[in-house]
Every structure is written in C-alpha cells, then in structure tokens.
Image (cartoon, rainbow, N blue to C red; front, side, top):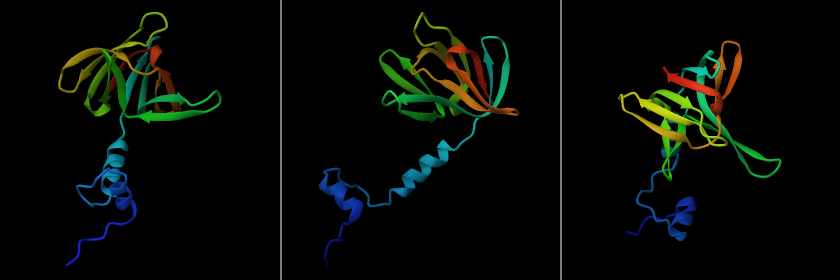
Amino acid sequence: MSAPRITGLYQWMVIAGLGILSVAPLTHAVGAETKSAEKSFQATVTDNEGKDHDIKNVIFYWEEKISETAFVPHELRYLPVKSGSATVNVKFDAIKQVDFKPGAEKTLPVVSITLTSGKSKEFSLGIPGSIKGQDEFGEVDLPAAGLKRMVIK
C-alpha cells in the first residue's frame, strides 16, 4: 500500500517548510473566524458634549495609510489598546463599558475598560480611530478622541 499523495495547496505548504499536522480543509478555520466576526453589537455612546447615541452594528474603524492617496479600511469588533509596549485587542463581547479620557497633547485618549466579569483596567488607545455604526437616521461616525463613554448592550 502506498502513502497518500499530497497535492495543491497542501503540497506547497510542505515544500515551503510549513508542515502539516492535519490535512483538513482550510475552509473550516476560515468559516469559524467569519462567523465570530459577523456578530453584531449594540451600544450607547456618549460624546464629549454629553449627547447619547444608540448605535447598532458597532465597530471600531481606522484607516491604514499605504501611500499619499491610498488607504486600507479596517472594521474591528474589538478595541485595540496599549498596555506598556504590548497591544491588547479587547473583544467587544467581553466589554461592558469603556470610559474615554483625553490624552496629553497630540496623544491618543486613555480608556478605562470594564469587562462583563466586572474587572477593569486603564489603557491608552492603541490606534487613532472612531466608533461607527447605524442609528435610526443613518450611519454614525464618532471619533474616539471626542468620546466620553461607550456602554455595550
């Protein structure tokens, strides 16, 4: 009896030295990631003027500059924050509330995150971005630097 023949993408992975522990199709991992990324969040976001915004399909949005005229949009369902030199991606489904405090001049806001477990910790925002979503009138875009609080429902 001969060994099974490895072809296509799996063959390329073996040749590239990536090795394979399982020959299961990659679509399973991608599908699982897509399902969790599709989860929708609702939040009440309060801006620095004290105005509350009830938002559905909440995301953290930022644009990565590729060149002077090209940007790559990123729609995240987590909040990227800094803890020392580490970047921590706090998922929206673990967050109960985020309090925003203005940072020093030309720095990102400081955020105090309270988890659904009740634990809280202070971080600095990792990336300049905004909270986006929809309310009953249309798309809402709130720059993170202009926020006071976000409560995820």
